Image 1 (cartoon, rainbow over the protein chains, first blue to last red):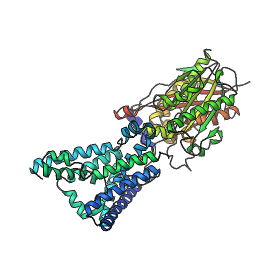
Image 2: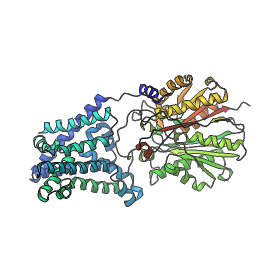
Image 3: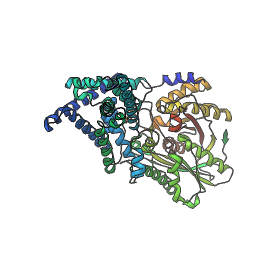
Amino acid sequence: MEKKKYQEIVKRHVAKENKKKNALVAFLIGGLLGAFGNLLIEFYSYVFDISSADAGIYMIITLVFMACLFTALGFFDNFVKFGRMGIIIPITGFAHSMQSATLDYKNEGLVLGFGSNMFKLAGTVILYGVTSAYFFGLIRLIITGGV
Amino acid sequence: MYLYSFLFCGVLCLIAQIILDNTKLTPGHITSIFVVVGAFLDVFNIYDKIITKVGGGALVPITSFGHLLIHGAMEQAGKSGVMGLTMGMFNLTASGITAAIVCSFVFALIFKPKN
Amino acid sequence: MTFKFKNAYIENTSLIAGYYEKLSPYAKYFDKIYEKDFYFKEKSLEQAETKLLSESIDLLLKKSKKTKDEIDVIIAGDLLNQITSSSYAILNKNIPFLGVYSACATSNESIIIASAMIDTKHIGNAICSTSSHNLTSEKQFRNPIEYGGLKPKTATFTATGGASILITSKKTDIKIESGTIGKIMDLGVKDANNMGAVMAPAAADTIARHLFDLGRDINYYDLILTGDLGIFGKEILKEFIKKDYNIILDSRYDDCGAMLYNLEKQKEITAGGSGPVCAPLINYGFVYQMLKKKHFKKVLLVTTGALFSPTFLYQKNNILSIAHAISLEVVEK
């Protein structure tokens, strides 16, 4: 049988993903995380009497800390499976990918285990973030001749 | 502000979920695209304006990571010219990345994966 | 390539399973279940998988009342890179070892090789073993264990367990009647999350060639089982084998992956089980006991394997598949 005809058979026997429910859940969970981030910023600005820019940094650190801790404790993967992109797109997704990759290699030592594998999943984000930031920055400098 | 935070972050996640469910792109691909978009939006200072309007909700998603990268790079470029791009790249994102590295390391020493 | 075996019999089997397999409708045919966690008191998950394989061999020796010195050869394989689970498990057994690999078709591959060697009188008996572990295969093939990777519903769930079978030239009540060695198939599937679709063509081809080589009709068998196509792969096979080979698989056909778990209760398992130990968990337990009770007389067991590696997959290659078949028959006195 040709590959094309086989693909047609395969497509007929696939479970339908519940796309609408997924989208709704991602929207709600992502939104809640966004609102929570805002809450943290207002909290830190008020309690520590700092600018909202600094509070923003504290907020990111808090979310990273929580995502790492919950991943290490073992239940964050269930949250991610439920919240889907609602948890992966916020900075929690980045922290979760680093923590889970590191956890796996406990038995292979600090250098060959942790060191080689911590950025297994997060590396892509850092690579493309930095590279695109650099080239966009360069283009902007060339266009505007300054900042 | 809370409402805008909720809506902005929510809509970004919604778009990401729709892309995930309807294309062959993986979460890794999608987060990378969003980082690049975040960096791009700051080329014309659009992301700064979004942050002022939306508040925390604009700093939570991974797009803010892209924004912070280019923002730090551009700030330093203002002081040191083109080389400033490389010098300032991690200025603003330093704390996020450091927190992730240190937390990942310490927690991985203490805990182990289960299911 | 089909062989009819003259002198290969099953003496005994042993099955050890893990946490998720506890709720299986066929759990009563398992010899031992590790209920608590995935480490089984070992330091690493890979060592836990090694323990499963090692213990299943020890358990089989105990059940058959044999010592290690009475076994001529062990043939084993698993999913870990370089089949290290098997190698490290068999280290202290002091028995000559042949390592084999065909992913989830490893169990039948080992049985075919053992039966052929027994038939040619090179050996008198052999133990065939395999193991798989859900977390070690997630770590090796997919994402980190604690990563909440989003999987589509067609993704099958790697079973955790160790399985061993003792094949002998001494006559018993169940014989290994024939074996068919499969050919590698490729129908253009690149989706590692839909292994049923990857492997169905291999199962179809092997079943068809088995029947053709022996001049048999599908109705010759009381029961036909495929290894781990899962609930979706099972339907794909039924349609594909009818269209391409004009063979109809009716109610006598089922799939070990679709049978292994209680899909009603275990909602996190969406498509069924997979892994080298998935088929043995049904074949060496339920099917073997049913044959002993003469509930079935002639069964055809087809194990299917997906041959690939993440490297080849990322280099945009298709995922290949293979299926090996054995037929078991009750010996009429």
